[in-house]
Length: 214
Image 1 (cartoon, helix red, strand yellow):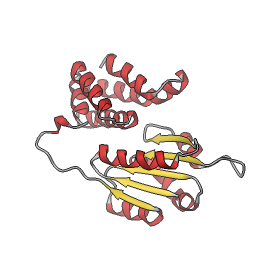
Image 2: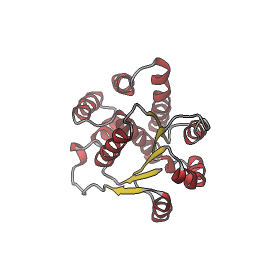
Image 3: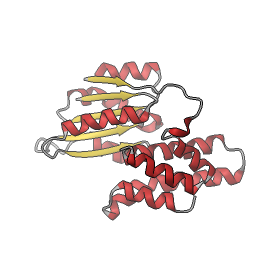
Image 4: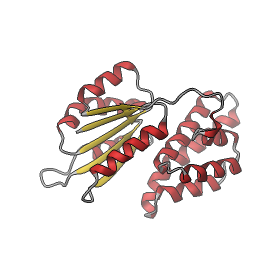
């Protein structure tokens, strides 16, 4: 089964999705998380179960449609996800109308959470993005701790930081800024994999990143 969550209010959308994931996880069902920083092999492994003797799974997919290669793979798999006995939870921040219509065709449920426009985004999780762009370690640390206190998922925080680094790369004109953005993207791409290798929670891996060289 496929469940779709969209909207620019990342916190509300992800909170709603996490609540649904927690409800589906009763009985200790395993969870696999994939975002646009993962590889095609990661996505393929997550989309296909281990065969007839595999146990029920939960797969959380975040902003996968933002990755050109992943988009085509997932688009082709939508009918399979709809009929699967596994639970697939998909979050896309701003899918275009055609993409939204296509996913909703196969989704068991679709929820949308758009943030109200604000003059100052500094009180939201996007303050983290501003701090990362500025290289303000203190503001990034304070914002990171505040988001944890507000029960923001580490995966959501990682997603915002990854988006901020990519946005910085696209909008920077100076070579030094582009170089810094590329290094941040590489670090954030590797972070979930490094956390898995270390056997630690993403929360602590993010803490090391925030305290490291920006």
